[in-house]
Length: 250
Picture 1 (cartoon, rainbow, N blue to C red):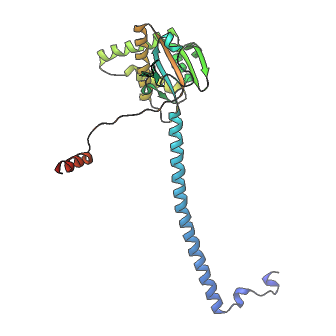
Picture 2: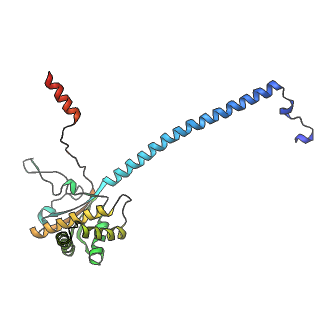
């Protein structure tokens, strides 16, 4: 029933004390709601920070989870590589002694794929990317192949041209950076990738190709689960010096 139809309005009929009590309750409700919103905003900020940290950690783990390794290796040794695990895994001799792996963990190019590698070939030769790698085999999470002679030759030529440019113009990695800019546009990379990083990949791979040409061995490329890298730190800090100085007084 509408108020104009003769119904009484409770707010008009209430006593002054009831009106005051209602006003106080409304004020308390507003303050409680404000505090709840403030607390929930703090909670949301904490949850948002934790979500952002989780996403960053996941992105880092994903970035470091797979890698591409380009290394020089004889055909005989390449045949003994565990394709599923990769060339950076430790090896052991017949008597159980540890021997050097086929490639160092520091040679890993994280979040780089066969597709990235073959697109570099297309940039350097203007030919089909399928001609970049041969004898491709896939076992479990790993994929292995060998660079074609044409690819090795063109990367070796990049290395030699870079050395000539360095002697004449005194500009290190100028050629690698120029190729890296074209590579950046031609392939799909993560947001963290920069032209300088691509230039260093080109530099390292061209050195491997030069070494393989000199030794008359193959250049192998492998993609799969990355191997953790460990760094040995050595040095002296103020804390360690203070500990040493105090120990010397005893």
